[in-house]
Length: 167
Image (tube, rainbow, N blue to C red; front, side):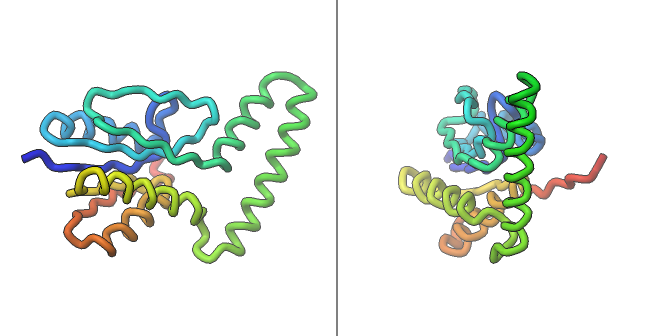
């Protein structure tokens, strides 16, 4: 009997995150004998959905802060006036983000975690989830999977912890 496996990764598709690159080989291998659902964080406003043969369902959870950051970086390449404008906007965003990290309850974007939890529940309402594999970057994916696991003890949880500073 096929197992229903849910992967939660960073950006998966046109702009692959390091965790998604690692997950892609595992997904291709497990996708032959199992039903694979994928939740990926959308990190660019213009990111396109790409279909993969091993994935039966793909869901995006938009990270507006990262999308805005990447948009500013793209716009800074266009010219001197836009570079100055978007550089200033990016610095303001960084200051707001830094203050948020200090004053938030947990030190991470809880809204993104809640969005991810909602998608997990939506996937489970269609077909019972047997295993969740959460890639640690972004950390919200892990926290969302842990919360789901607390409420559904029958589900197995595998956390793949990445080391950001390995190189």
